[in-house]
Amino acid sequence: MFYLISALLQIIDREAVEEVRSNREIPEIKPGYDIQLKVEVPENKRRISTIKGTVIAKRNAGLQSTFRIRRHEAGVCIESLFPLYSPNIKEMKVLGKRRVRKAKLYYLRDRMNALKKQ
Amino acid sequence: MQSFGAAASVSRSLMRRVAQVFCKDPRPSPHSSSSLYFVAQLRKLCAMPENDDDPICTRIIDAKPRVMTPSSKRTGVIAVKCGMTGVWDKWGARIPITILWLDDNIVCQVKTPEKEGFCALQVGCGQKKEKHLTVPEVGHFRAQGVPMKRKLREFPVTEDALLPLGTSIGARHFLPGQYVDVTGITKGKGFQGVMKRWNFKGGKASHGASKSHRSMGSTGQRDAPGKVFKGKKMPGHMGVDQRTVKNVWVYKIDPARNLLWVKGQIPGATGNFVFIKDSVFKKPDISQLPFPTHFAPEDEDPTKLEPLVAYLSDTDPFMAAE
Image (tube, chains in turn green, brown):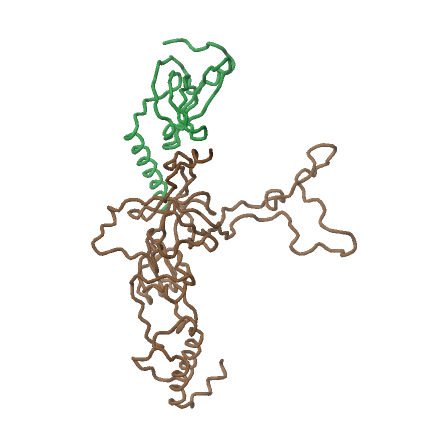
């Protein structure tokens, strides 16, 4: 019966992902992409902030998939983690792609301007 | 009660008079259940022949919705813990969810005051083959006339909440938005030390503490009392205990698959059985609950039912904080 239960969770997860994908257009996101997000923050009186940065990591976990963005803002480097299927991400746009040879680009934390344009 | 065996010579008219005195109205009320039991036991010992139109022997439980009173108690249900996920509710807040599967719950035995002395329903969950069950278990299912179940559990109910034998209980027994108490056997943790098992503070990490960073410390006084008290918290086996998590919020009900989406954590590992009952402290709304259980109408197709989600407030909770 255990395989039934794990299959059930997979089915539910898949259905939830399909439902979100049919309502919203979510582009393909890979490490090395430059993307621009419009995020609505419910705690901050639902203001929509624009976030522009590079994707340095992506974690595949069905509905709980997340990705990390690294950006420069006012002289400070900020890394943020976002759930891919969150209803608070209103818009996602891919601005450019860079050639990378890794899945997780954590080496960028030690370097400046390490990525080359494709 | 064994000494009553010699009372076989008690006259029939006397017994009938006793029965009349104790059970005046044909529909027994909850208060006379103990007297019903007493008379039924007395009858058995005196070997009196039973009539068909006796108010005590015949009890017809029909599968119809009834009115729930504040003192009524419904059955619980047996479910399988399927796993955990997370959802975003309609306002964008994150809710951790445990999914519970009500796998084919059927009433396997009805316990009444006349025969057993109390009101209870024995509910069975799952399926099992006859070759995997012991002979006494198979005999129990055969005697009741009920399919073979994997897990049985008895839930005490009030007399107006009794269900007929063989009634199936589904996910619609509960309402989305109500609170439930969930009981399960916790995950096994093995032999554990005192810091994990009893939340002891342990010893100093440095400053000369010699080999006593996670130890118990002292176990008592000196030669008065001269012993360690019983129940002293010590290292030992932890886990595999029955625990109840109270006031668990039901977020969503999927009647097509008999699933209950519940907020938060539940004792036990994935694949284990849990027992769900209406919450004792945060009592649900009596007028809305299906009592004694939800009876599906004949023409309803169970595969076409939509999931029901709990009612969340109409006003945005994040904006209301200003």
